[in-house]
Image (cartoon, chains in turn red, brown):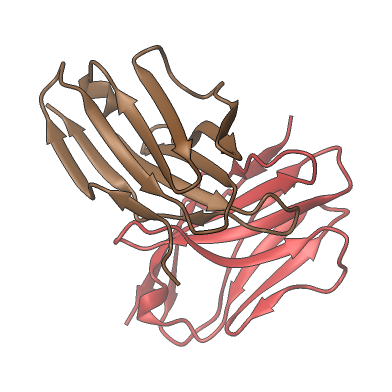
Length: 114
Length: 114
């Protein structure tokens, strides 16, 4: 069975600095998708970024980028130029090609210090 | 474009009462998911519909929970009778049934059973 692990329950960063959130996963499959979702205090679940496992190039979305290491089964999220609005819970999620169910990590709470 | 719409946003009711949560998926999406989020258990998939048909309901906690999708634009999650341990945030999400399409979440319903 696939699992997703986020080892950092909480992270803090100074505004305008860069922070990296860690995610590792376990799977025997070769084709899958990985996602980062953000959940601010308003509790919406917002898709931040996604990565297809067959793509070697790391996905980027403005200030958000990932470091995808397929062999190491690692999928970290880097947030550059952190802003107060980035404060939220961040969830890493896995989905195989053959199953639409998302496997979720426990989440990392990101605190932005002004 | 309208996102996934859930109602009510908050629900407070007494133990033993029937609770009905509602969801309108994004137009054109043919997959719909109901999740429950608690501090203790994180995000749990309750049930997954594809083309209005329940595909996987293995996450439904017990017979007190039921879900329906009478048409492509509406789904309900019902709890009868409700218990205090059902208190949680319930999310609905939808997506296209394609490999590439991520799930888009509603704002959730915060349910409190007294």
